Length: 442
Ligand code: AMP
Image (cartoon, rainbow, N blue to C red; front, side):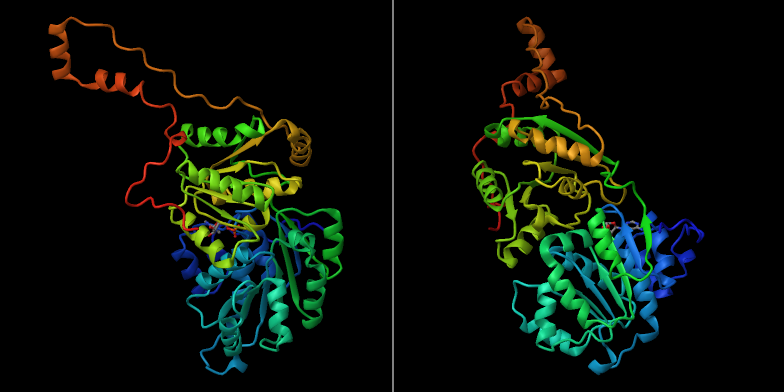
């Protein structure tokens, strides 16, 4: 069933009746008004309902589930050092390590004024450190499914007191083959619990599946199904495969993009593109599933700090990444699954900022483009690649006497004239190394 506005929509966080500690944390994050998904979901979660929530990426869905869950856990908040006083009460599952870390960062920020403990566990790193934290007791556990099962199998953590289960990016979790893991995890949880499913896209099969373990769920939809966020300008350029790297650099240069996330379909393509970009002197890094966890985090951190200009990523690695004010996403290769297009372009234009999504479409990708267009229910405008500004004509010859006077008054014509002889796109040139730009961390 679809939730209709039975509950009055709140315009402020105060009206959502959240604990003062949460209101302070939200204010410190700089949030002024709740986003639509927060307005819709928070009262329902507070009322104890199971949810099937569809919200586009970047709409504030993490706070939509975290804030009410923390509020509901307030009566259990305590400063005791006994692990028994800090059982896992809320379990948040995410499909990728990066998303899990991001959700955890948010949980920690929202819970900063409350004596509730939280942590994140994910694979690819040593278990020891995670074990020590789990043994001490945490109320909120954010995890990727496989690593959670490892810890549960070792009895490092008990899940028999979990009251709240959240599946973030639920469609992908089910899609990525996590269903067997998920079923094993569900078997470890009390049957009586509140379950929340958040996802940017849902198809019928996943909805059916989700309904099988939700209790009388309310469906919350804040955006039209499968519509990419309207704040993102979407353009497509027809480019032969061999010309894509030049096209990418040209758009970056001419659109004056400070940074962009560049998607390829495969890990091999991501590595190859990253190497070619680095050879051309561009600060680039790649993230994908085969990279060591530490390299993925380094690349992501370098990107967030602005040291990496182009981050080349595959779909899985980039899932859920939230980078404030990311100006542009490139589909260097269109995804095989049209849903991934929506997720990709959702990396830009987040939380009210405008964004740009550029697809470089080679002739053999026409079918994929048609699939994307069917999925988002609109045509992508194919535009020519941006061209460099027309050269400024050289100034007309002037008599020698006038030349001296002009040079004294205004040097502009001289500098304009010189600019026309500069290369069209500096990014196409071999790297000019300065003290700082020693290349990507990889
Ligand atoms: P999410 O969809 O949870 O990944 O959130 C996307 C971004 O929106 C994150 O950077 C959040 O910090 C930010 N955000 C969440 N809620 C709000 C809000 N009410 N006002 C402003 N920014 C928000």
